[in-house]
Amino acid sequence: MKARTIVVILIIIIFTGALAIAVENQGAKDIKLDGGKRGYIDFPHHLHQNVIGECNACHNVFPKTAGIIKDLKLQKKLKKKQVMNKTCIKCHKAKKKAGEDAGPTKCSQCHVK
Ligand code: HEC
Ligand code: HEC
Ligand code: HEC
Image 1 (cartoon, rainbow, N blue to C red):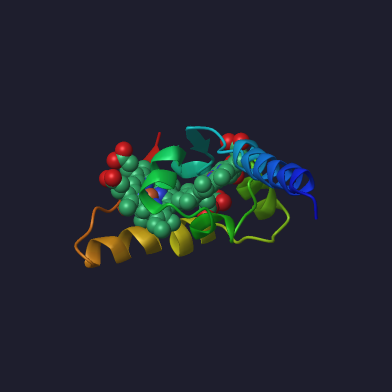
Image 2: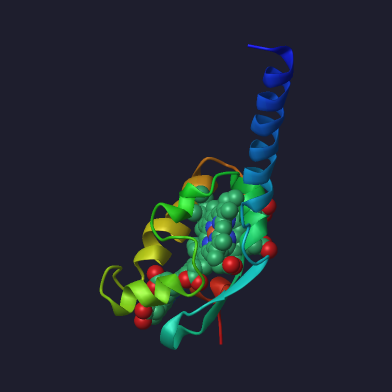
C-alpha cells in the first residue's frame, strides 16, 4: 500500500470514531418520570450517568427513548413499579449496604406530590 493510501484510511478511521462519540445522545439532564397516583419523580439523569458511568445499568431494562417506561407499562411489557423496585431501589439499597453514596429508598424522597 502507498503511504498516501494509508494516511487516507487512518483519517477515515479517526473521523468516524470521533463522529460516533459526538453522536451519542446523552438525553435530558433531568427527567420527570410518571409515578402514577404517588406523584412524579424528579430523576437526575446526568448525575446518574456520571456516578454510574454505564448506560446499561438502566437501559438494559428500557431503551433510550423519552416516555418509554410509561409506554412499556401500558403495553404490559413492564409491570407497575418494576423499574422502581428492580432497578432504582435495588441499586440504591445495594450501594447503601456497601457503604457507598446511595440514592433514596423512602417513597416521599422520590415521589413528589
Ligand atoms: C440510572 C438509570 C439510567 C442510566 C444509568 C442512564 N439512563 Fe438514560 N434514561 C433513564 C431514564 C429513567 C430515562 C427516561 C425514560 C422514560 O422517559 O420513560 C432515560 C432516557 C434516556 C434517553 C431518551 C430521553 C431523552 O432525554 O432524550 C436517552 C437518549 C438516554 N437516556 C441516554 C442515556 C445514555 C447515553 C446513558 C449512558 C451514558 C444513559 N442514558 C444512562 C435512566 C438512565
Ligand atoms: C428511588 C426512587 C423511588 C422510590 C424510593 C419509590 N419509588 Fe415509586 N416509582 C419510582 C419510579 C421511577 C416509578 C415509575 C416506574 C415504575 O413504575 O416502575 C415509580 C412508580 C410508582 C407507582 C406507580 C405505579 C403505576 O404504574 O401505577 C406507585 C404507586 C409507587 N411508585 C409507589 C411507591 C411507594 C409506595 C414507595 C415507597 C414504599 C415508592 N414508590 C418508592 C421511583 C421510586
Ligand atoms: C446502578 C445504580 C443506580 C440506579 C440503577 C439508580 N440509581 Fe439513583 N442514585 C444512585 C447513586 C449512587 C446515587 C447517589 C449519587 C450521589 O449522591 O452522588 C443516586 C441518587 C439518586 C437520587 C438523589 C439525587 C440527589 O440529588 O441527591 C434520586 C432522586 C435517584 N437516585 C433516583 C433514581 C431513580 C428514579 C432511578 C431509577 C429510574 C435510579 N435512581 C436508579 C445509583 C443508582
